[in-house]
Image (cartoon, rainbow, N blue to C red; front, side, top):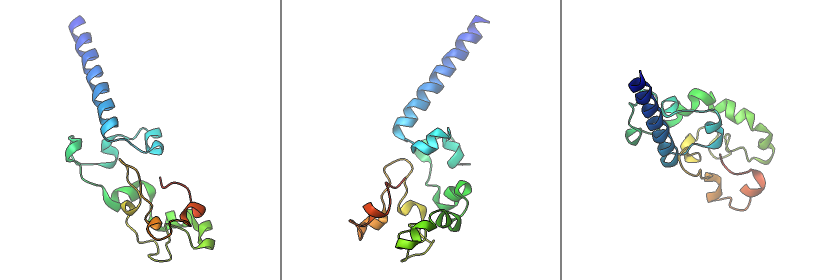
Length: 127
């Protein structure tokens, strides 16, 4: 009995260590971390080796975030300034999610490439 308890404690300690190590190597955005998302929540059916996971693409993002039209609708108040990043005057609602959003590293707002000064007035930091 004692051996089983010790084995269980060892397993839990290793799982916690692995989880801490993964969270440092592959940090989540705060809003996703708050939801306690695990690797498999986004990298579904990609095995159990995080270093081999592939980007989930729009299909993966939209499995939770619904549709690009819905995202554009949520920010339609920005249409007045023609600054809705999810309904761009240049591309409409067709941009790939990862053109601006990155889960495991800092996101980059593509609008900044041409609108360096305006973007700071239009919106906050890209999540």
